[in-house]
Each structure stands twice: as C-alpha cells, then as structure tokens.
Length: 415
Image (cartoon, rainbow, N blue to C red; front, side, top):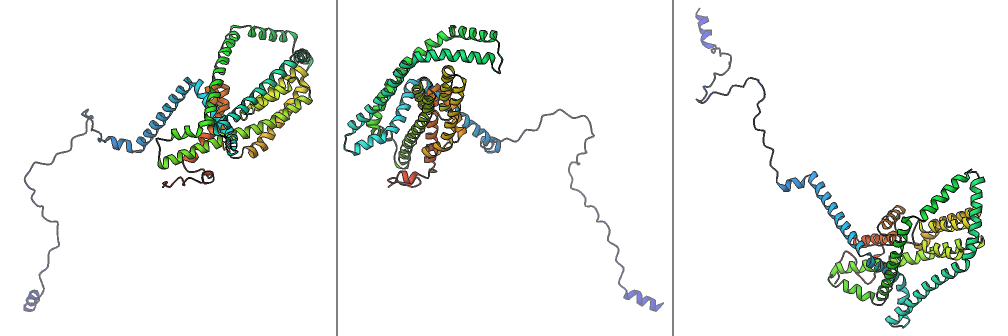
C-alpha cells in the first residue's frame, strides 16, 4: 500500500479533455430581427437605378455608336443642303464646271504658246479662237451632212419600214396585221398627245437655258485660261503653311486629273468614231458622218455613251437598210466597245481615271438623276477628282513628289 501511494504521488495528474468554450455573454442591445414569414409580395417603391453622368453615358459602346450616327447624319444633311443649293443655281454651276474641265484640257496648249514667246492674253486668245473654230466646224459638218442626205434618208426609211413590216408579219415572230395596226395607232396617239406638246414646250425652254449657259461658259472659260493662276492664288490667300501647300497640291492634281481625263477620253472617242464611222460608210448607212460625230460625243460618257450612240446608228441602219445591215452594225459596235474597254482605256487613260467600274456606274446614275445628260458627262471626272483630292490630302498619292518637286513633303512644315 505504501508503494502504491508513492506511485500515485510521482504520476502527474490527468488533464481533462478540451470541450467547447463557454459562451461569452452578449452585450446588452436590441434583439436580432427575426426573419419575416413568407407572404404575398409587397408593392413598395422600386429600387432607384444607379445615376450616371452624361459623360459616362456617351463614353460606353452605345454612346459611341450614337455619336458616330449623329456625325453621319450631320454630314449627310450638309451634303443634301449643299447639293440642293447648287441645283438651284445650276445655270451657273454647270457652265463653271464645264469651263474648268475644258481649261484643264486646253491649259497645256496655252502654256506652250506662252513658252514660245506669246503674251498671256494673246496665247489665250489663240487657243480660245481655235476651240471655237473647231466647235463651229463640227456643227457645220453635221448641219450640211443632214441637209444633203435628208431626202435619201426619208426614201430609204420608207423602204426599210416596209421591209421591217414584212419581216414582222412573215418572219419567225408571226405577228398579225391587227397587232401592227394597233401599235401604229398607239404611236400616233402618243405623238399627238398633250404630254408630247408639253414636252415640246419644256424642250424649248431647255434650248433657251442651254444657249444662256453656253454663252456664260464661253466667258468663264476665257477668264480661266487667261487668269486661272491669279484666281487660284486669290482663293488661297486665307491659308498659309502646310495647309496652303496641300491646297496647292490639290489644285495641281485636280488640273492633272481633269486634263488627262479629257485628253484620254478624246483619243478613245476618236478611235471609236473612226471605226464605227468607217463601218457605216462601207455599209452605206445614211447620215454616217453625223452618226460618227454622235459616237464621238457619246464616248465622253463612260460605259454607256458609245453603246447608246452605236444603238442609235443601228436603229438608223435598221430603218434605212434593213435588219441584216443593222445586225452587222451592232456587231461592229460590240467589237469596238470590247477593244475600248480591254485595250484603249488602260493604255490611253493610264492613271487619270483610277476608279472601279462600280464606282463609275454609281457616279453616272447619281449624276443622271441630279442633272440629266450634263450630270452624266460631269459625274465621272468629278468622282475621279474627288478621289485624287482624298489621296493628296491624306498623303497617299505616290506621285506627289514627282508632280510637285518644288514643294516640301506633305508631312513637313515649310520653311
């Protein structure tokens, strides 16, 4: 027992196992809220959305899209108002544009005369008189050609219409006499209708407007050829530094594009005129020379001008010489147009008209809608000038340095 007592004294006392701590008494305060029992939803005041400043509203993606849309609408509105205002004074705008294009084409000839020693006024007068003599000569040739061949054309047209009627009745179409009579009566009624008479009155007013515009164009062209540099310097007086240098490059590039376009188109039109006119002469189609001149004028409307003129020549051949000759004329026109599009345009025009065919077609459509035939003639060179100006202004035109060796680069400040 004594030994058991000693062992009990040597062994340390057994520790109790740890248990959960005793809870600390909470501080006195209101009791915690008890969760509300589920029930029907209450229709109280909705939570207020987060308030955003106007700057935050316009800086997100939707705001940036809205800003771009507003900018596009503003640009379209300004363009529409500008076009509407220009159309109201088209009797002034169209002669100015035509005079500018002709001045760009004739300008090199005037500069050549000046380098030969002629004063500026004398060189302008010589070039101006030469242009007027050329236009008068073309008009005289057309007038006497039509006058000398009009009687023959009427006789051949009567025979051609008889042949066409026989072909329609006995040919593969198999039309009946009653159908032809109905078509003839419809054509006569249309020719004697009030619409044709009102159109004739409108045409008379258009002739008067054309004469007034032509006179104004002649005067403006003379001053462009004589004082073109002074006029351009006067317009550039409010500008200086890099902006003035770019505007001078724009002016020079504009004249280069317009002059190259007119001269290149004239060469292509001359080739079309010679080819189609020779075919008309060989086939003995009446009014071959006037029709060839119409082909020359129509070639200044890209893509469709020469084709429409060729179709007119084919119609004359159909009426005067019959369907076989008309088909031959159509084949010649198609072959000439293929030659023009695949060979002459890329070689002769060069870089004067750096526009896609779709852009040309859209420009032709817009110009025709806005200003008729004159708009169709002016739309393509204006589109080419617009594209050239964009290239020059954004310093993307590779010909800037070669074209303007006396000017600093576009991205430097002139000294």
